[in-house]
Image 1: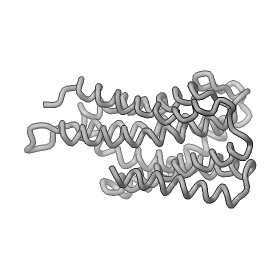
Image 2: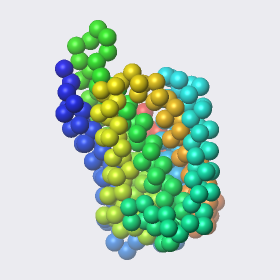
Image 3: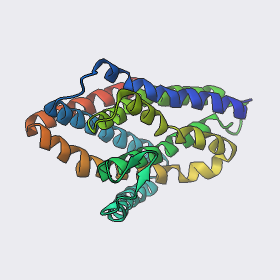
Length: 251
């Protein structure tokens, strides 16, 4: 049978995979030009849109109404969060402060961390034994591997968004891992209390998707359009979205 330690080990490796997404930026010591930063924002937007679609698609299988409710809640949460943060210079998030960092970046980091909870819960539930089967090890292992692979391009998207704000490659990679850390935190309770987490997972997925979509259209794309032409931004967004979706379909 699957033990709690098994879930922790698989989840830890899964989270660490996010850091691989930041590796390409160590090859760019000179940073990004203004146009490159705009296109990087567009690429990150495509990754986030694809991740949002995946969460909606996977969540609606188990609870379509909960996913739709989550979408509205996620959008409302972003609105309330923005109203709270606007004009506040004392807001900080592990070193990123409202005085030196765009408020949208703080929201982006928080939302990426929140959306990871649903993915971690999915791993924990997958490891839990279903009625009539001796163990959920094989199913849970496959889900953990799939999400770990998914974390690489998602970590790239997080790192990419931070690099455009002037973060170092090491800092961006560390944040890519930190925003996935809730997967580990959520996996163990979900494994131990799988029925409860199964019931709320569609709502959590919808919430994460709704919040990310707001970040894409409210922050990433407008910033991209400030630094690059609309045609290039559109092409970069669609390219990254299609690439990420193709990667997901291969898993």
